[in-house]
Length: 136
Image 1 (cartoon, rainbow, N blue to C red):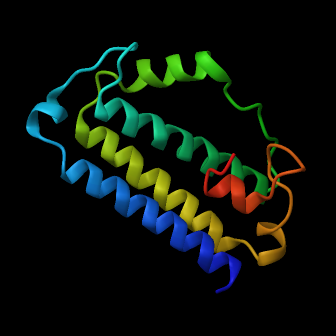
Image 2: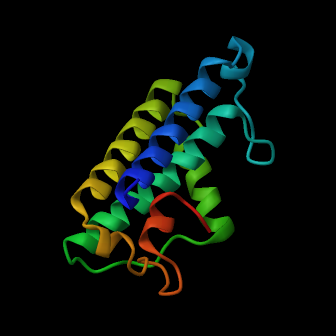
């Protein structure tokens, strides 16, 4: 299987697993507001997709030759993400997830295998394909 197809397979399986996780939540779990110290299911889904959105936007900027801004870091990034989505509805979080997934899938489709196998936007000892699928 070609590298582009492998990346797309990983992205699709990840999205399906996320949708399956959400589908199996109880109404009580979906209604749990969570706190910053104890994130609820919605907070965790928002967090994962916030980072997919950040990675996707960064990769698109890289592909079109735009300046890459530093990535959000550590606790500050987590705090900003939590504050951004803490009072969002499930529908808003799922819309973010769908757009983030679409963006990163489209970015993968734009690339040839040399770019995909080249250095990531974060550091040269990491492959872009690993950045796309969120491998540390």
